[in-house]
Amino acid sequence: MTVRPFVMWPDPRLRSVCADVTEIDDAVRAVWDDMVDTMDAMPGVGLAACQIGVMRRLAVVDASETRGRAVRMANPEILHASIEPREHDEASPNLPGVWATVTRPRAVTVRFLNADGAMEDRDFVGLWATSVQHQIDHLAGRMYFDRLSRTKRQMLLKKAGKQAR
Image (cartoon, rainbow, N blue to C red):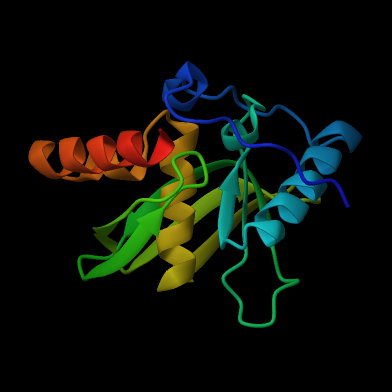
């Protein structure tokens, strides 16, 4: 088991767009394995590669109750999002000690390269959908608090700064 350290906010890598993955090889599989171990150690329901300093469009999500069902994704993109919203408290190990309620679509259809190197379209609902969207934001250089109003975002970042001292 390899648990990798997190890149901490405000590291500029968290604001950078990750590079596309061109093929699924042993190096990608090794990063995914480390990401699953790191996600499970948080504990969390998803992780984007940039959160551990790997600047490639790789994500893992496991919102199952039993765990061990992680979906490994390369280059995930949302094809369709439901109109129905879902609110959920979101946080990030890159900015510990704070969280915010974020509203996102309740369900999404995502296209990605899977662990076999095949293109896959998959529907995600509820917490799975929230986590996938959260990870896709990370891969695009966005944090969950970017979805908050300016005032709420400033308050959250101020609180995080106080806790870090």
